Image (tube, rainbow, N blue to C red; front, side, top):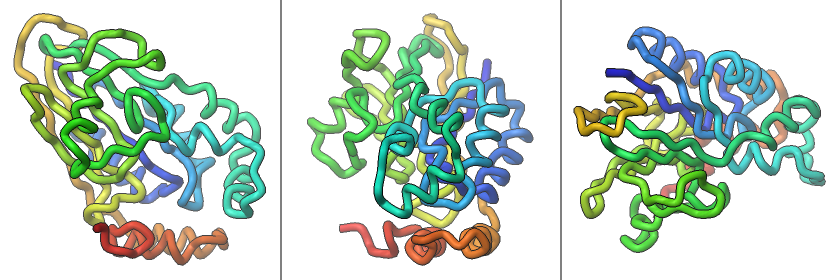
Length: 244
């Protein structure tokens, strides 16, 4: 059986990324897959892009990866663009939309936000109809069949739900978790690329990291929106506000 590590939403947070990668390295992982949003929010997007390109076997595109190379006027985005440079933003823009494979007889589809768009946001508490739509395919995906297992990121809330016999899960966020103040990623274990039914295991992993070091990085780099970012890291709540 092979073991895949699924990471996502690193958002320029190097202390969190390094803590997660250290944990992964101790688990005999076969392959590392990144579900997007390498950049934005944190101070070291350029370092994360370079490290992900070195360490991850598959990288798909998130919403930040898609729009960060666009023409913008927002000073916060301009600050991120200047640090990334043209080569990195071009790399991010050209990332694939999804990754699909068989594992222990289950058809698995991974994407950043939904099977239709990197900008469509689906929360674990949304309607059953919305959540069931996550198993569907679209023109953006490679295979027209519905998924047995659908995995995504984007909302920074780690969860697993069984919906009418299918598995929907979210990896949570490495660098900007909004459910608890520890980095999050997922391990998938099974017979990779096999259509034969077999053991299939999904595990959420939470990794503590030096939040105050990440806070200091944001201050040292004089991020324009550092206060809001720091509040999220310390509280695990979006812009420091409780979710409703």
